[in-house]
Image (cartoon, rainbow, N blue to C red; front, side, top):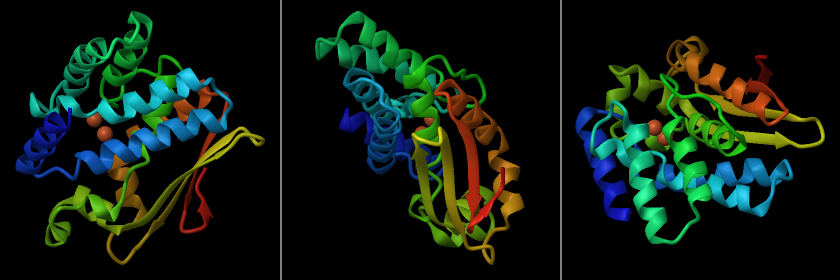
Length: 207
Ligand SMILES: [Fe+2]
Ligand SMILES: [Fe+2]
């Protein structure tokens, strides 16, 4: 699995994409686990969310297009070898296969947690070459993001993406120019978990 992750990251590096390797996988696993555990979901579901988070981008070394579905099929083979039950394999596969904003749907709590975790990882550390921020909007927006934190408030039933953006590098409009569909997906995911979705950029509540 580590080899596949490294290959996926190499492939996306060649295409000029931001970091999608072990850092992103581990962070998404951690955040997805955190989302469900804070909202009181079972240990089984929180662990499946972590597994889904770790494997969700594995398919990128096969192809960027449909990478979510390729990752789901790769995950099945790995989890089957680890003797996960068919039901648990199906939960992870469904979440992984639906994490991309182009074709994905929020199908259950594990998929909702994965979407929220994945889409909230916008950060300077994902940019491979800071010089590229001048010419590439994805690098620029990520490079401008100095802090990104998904705040889950179980009492208030709200999930807030807190961002600190250096607006001298990229304005807030550029963030929404490339990530609006992701934020809409996050709102649907939060709703599936019985929560509202909010954004706070530089201490300012957006919605
Ligand atoms: Fe992905
Ligand atoms: Fe991802």
